[in-house]
Length: 319
Ligand SMILES: Cc1cc2nc3c(=O)[nH]c(=O)nc-3n(C[C@H](O)[C@H](O)[C@H](O)COP(=O)(O)O)c2cc1C
Image (cartoon, rainbow, N blue to C red):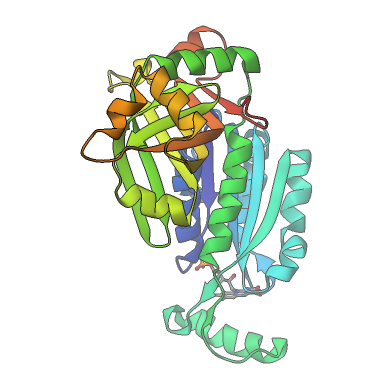
């Protein structure tokens, strides 16, 4: 699993906030000011740089620190962000630094930031007045930050970051995943719609890329009816950082018609007689989850010489 160092500079707090959010989504890792980037020997797989723009230029102190640490920064892959109001100029703003960092930069973008006039110190308050005038801008607060866009952008970077550097053969990941799923029977099923989220501890069975869950009803069904996307966690009790074993599954849920062939087949798999189930005081409804993706974190992978987190995508479920 790749580790991430988030480095930033910030005069009025926006870039710091954006950096902390990046660290939250892209962890494990650390977040610090560029000026605090000290000389320990720790190596980072991914470095995220966030540099604010003041008066049409990247923060000079940040650029100086980047120049002074060029060799260390270039050991990993780099994501480069500037915070500014004019996001459309981001490439131009970032150019001097992206040239210095060269091919290590895997992604660069502008984050439209905030400018709140009464936060500015006296010097900047005076300078911005003439800056606004010359740029033809109104003298007012600017709140340009788009939280949704930023989180989606960070998730895109996370997707890259989570791709194992040492990946196991897919067939083997599938075998280990199936073994794990077959040897467990309880999961946490997460469903959600709009502002409503629900995690349900529940028994499941696994077969051929699908999870099956029998249930009498409840809020999870309300969510599934409105949004079939679900997430399932199956995990061992925590026994220490070197004995981690658990998986997060993404999938699509559907409700199988009671009495259908598939419903009956599932009952047979559970050694349940259809007639007996029909005689129960409450109906049992069957949820079928088509697995799209498994993220399997298992300390045991490390002993096999591959990354501790392996990812399996199901493009074509078997049945
Ligand atoms: C003094 C000052 C000058 C700025 N100059 C520019 C600029 O030239 N171009 C731009 O797109 N944004 C400009 N901005 C907007 C900032 O880049 C944006 O507010 C950023 O979020 C500031 O980061 P900080 O809160 O971490 O200091 C300026 C902001 C300030 C406070």
